[in-house]
Image (cartoon, rainbow, N blue to C red; front, side):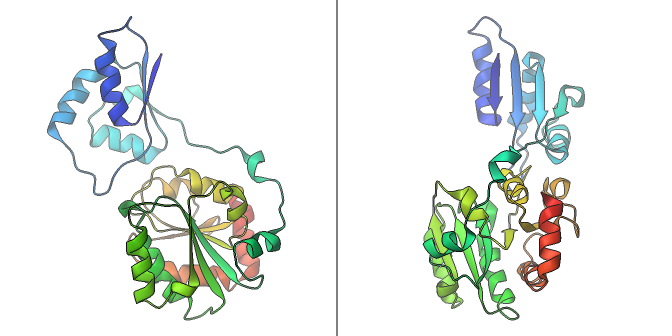
Length: 261
């Protein structure tokens, strides 16, 4: 069996088929770029490669539709197997106040957190701008960003321009992400493009209320108004107001977190 995870490995897997003992081929599509541009050479290749592919899996219904209407794969060969996380990994309790102190955060501060690569499709510029909106109503709030990437310096410059340097903590790549997530009051996702986000599932499994852009597969994971709030792509004002609304209502924040879990 050859299992190709994402499109580029799939291309080489199909080529390898002709130089091996005809293995079974499985192709799993995990995510997409934004904007998503169709390429005629790729579509032609897909029409050929599908004859040598035994199974195609998509991690959410959004991806299945993309594979059918954008990549022109045969719909009968595609099935959805949703991403998931092991709930037990997120069930253990930690000393949240001690963890916050170790990160340089105050015990009384509200924490908005995000985890992911600092890359264009995650649109962290929108998230940073939304913090300014949150601070109109809630002063004792910090934004914690876990992850590294090519936009780190650009994002720090934006934070400085908006006068938010003291309110944003860039933690870089970490090995203790699960524990850090448990310090969040709200998990925020500002992505322009998502499929079935693992980190979104991890936040929900940790019992953290989420606010996310209603893109890609996010509406399949988050029930708007019940397990979190969905906002339009690129709308920093709406994102900030939604975060502030949850932070201002401790009971509703807890309720959403538990519903998501």
